[in-house]
Image 1 (cartoon, helix red, strand yellow):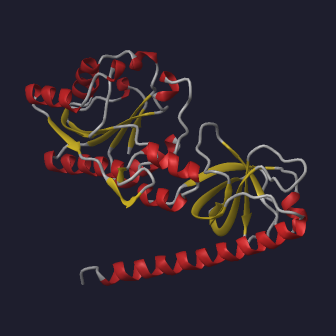
Image 2: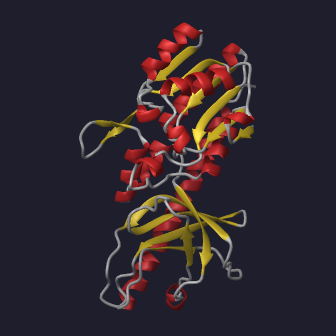
Length: 332
């Protein structure tokens, strides 16, 4: 996949493209992206995903959006899906003030030569978000390109707000803030994960017999709500079952600010300060709580590790079963 960081870097005579921020690349986004790929095959033209390096809300809002994915993670998903090109634009003052009509004419028509454009049902673009699918359709009719608008995907689970909610990055952020990683994972179509550099901590975990990796997470990355989670961690290309505690350590008399601490269940090697560790969340084990003494805390950590190991065993069994089922369905 070729990555282009400005419109000057790309000039295609024809293409089929998908438009969107695609933060988290959730199951609704995948519908948009897969449709663009089908359109590219139908028209026999290159496939292009048009997205942004930074979330538009960073420039528009005083409260920056917490992100579900990094640019590198989104690009990896686009490439894995099979896109030929990714046009990644910086959402700056120029783009913010570019009219919706100019966005279509300059970017989509002049530089991408679109034969087909795929967007989500609520996609907006251009200055003051004036552009929408109806505008795209009007241009498509006059300029001879197809416009595909993908209907919303709804959750099968009834949420507290009532009914099946439309899958969106906003909804997933809310679920993760509540600590509901299982439903968030369902809507993402993968396990939510965060990566960070392992930094030196207060050594409390080591003193308790459960050494932890204290992660420094990049700014604006969404961290799930306080609590203890089961999942798995990837360190130097190796996967380990893991327990992750997010919070302020209220049991101790000198609680610290919010921290992300990961304990690798089967790690017996040397320290790995300065390395990058990725934590994937599969289940929330419990809310953060204050214990009456250190002994009670240690007993709970032991129980957390036992639960996390069982979740990991169940995960491996489910994965093996799924792979075996897929293998039996392959044509002979």
